[in-house]
Length: 109
Image (cartoon, rainbow, N blue to C red; front, side, top):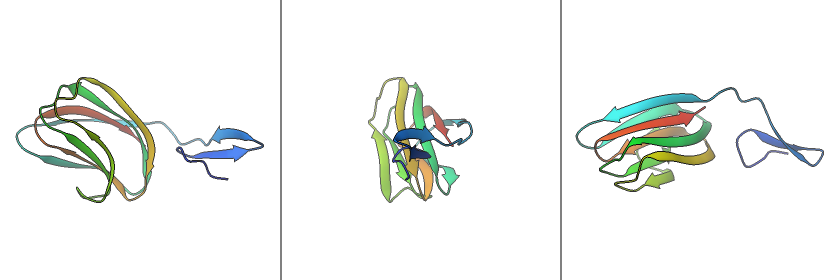
């Protein structure tokens, strides 16, 4: 039976995580106006968005290869530095849109 998080299964009443490999981390620094980053095409798992410096604009995370469709999350403008953990699957792709200057790290696989 499949689990709701990552690559988990229920085996003999226990929740077991399949070997999914290690996370990839990319650091994206943008300047100026809105920027779209296609992080990964196809299905995967978003662990976290790490805000390295406070951003002036919002950061929107999509399950898509374009800046539309299913929204995974939204970090508001002026969000403080820190790790924002999602631990969710995405199906179509992982795209991140920044509204202005941003320095973020995306942890996914």
